[in-house]
Image (cartoon, rainbow, N blue to C red; front, side, top):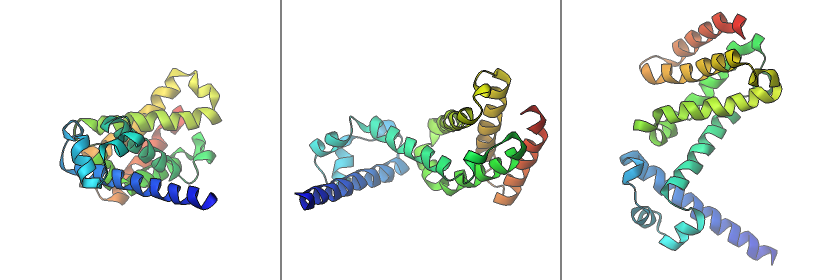
Length: 184
């Protein structure tokens, strides 16, 4: 019985991976609205009923992959739990590097009209982590604005300056955050 469950789990995992790989391949070529379940299933070599066992629709699949990407970025910030206003520049460096480590997937998932969507997701997710450590920030509109400015500003600065090398970008953002530190 246990062996059968493991086999089923592995099969489910393989199917899930096939669906996700097919989605990313299609998403790299076209906007989300143009991807059909039928073409995804053909590429993943599964039946439509199998797809619907895993996801409600293409948008639910996209949402799940986007959420995992945001979680992966946040998980890539090594010292997130150690964040303090005094080390906000180091935190910003780690955020930039965690973001850049996922850049290929980000460019696919959040291309076109979806670009600002990632900034909003990162803003929400990072604030939740920071608010757990500093609950008083949640009730302080100026802190919330400043955090959004730092998080989304960094993201949009990256998108607007694709030719900047990593060191220049990260150092510049660190310097900006150092200037803003007294407001935190």
